[in-house]
Image (cartoon, rainbow, N blue to C red; front, side):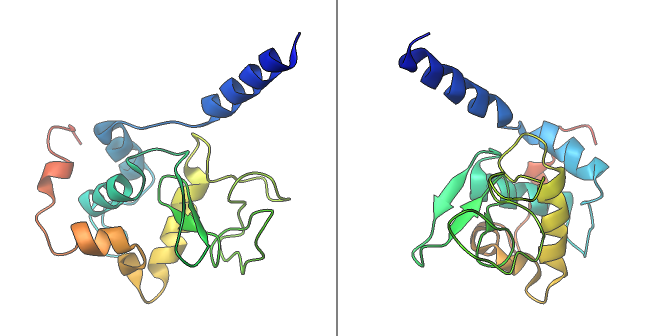
Amino acid sequence: MGAGCWLLLASLAAASRAKAFGRCQLAHLLQQEGLDSYRGYSLADWLCMAFYESNFDTAAKSINADSSTNFGIFQINNQLWCTDERSPSENLCRVSCTGTTRYSADLLTSDITDDIICAKRIVRHPQGMDAWEDWAMHCKGRDLSEWVEGCDL
């Protein structure tokens, strides 16, 4: 098999690890994982934040002006919360940002259990959901009922 075929197979394998959730699909999962009313934040808060942070995509990755990187559906930052191969971190969630370090959890896969555990830890800190700038800008203090509308929760 040629090098081009191997590259295609590798990219398909990596892509299959990621997932873009539908709004209601994610709502059900987050509810099941206990995020509705967690630390006073509604399920709609979590959905609104995840939408503006990653468009519900587990493979989302963005680089900030300070050169830190955000990972996964909740865009968890590598300066404090996760660790990757290029940046030392306090790694307060004890999780790998990308799956390339010694930690078994990975913020870029379709299994968002580790993302949820880490997001709960972030919200327990004094900033709460204000830790996510997109939530503060687009969701905080607004009627968010549309985020759970029609989801049969």
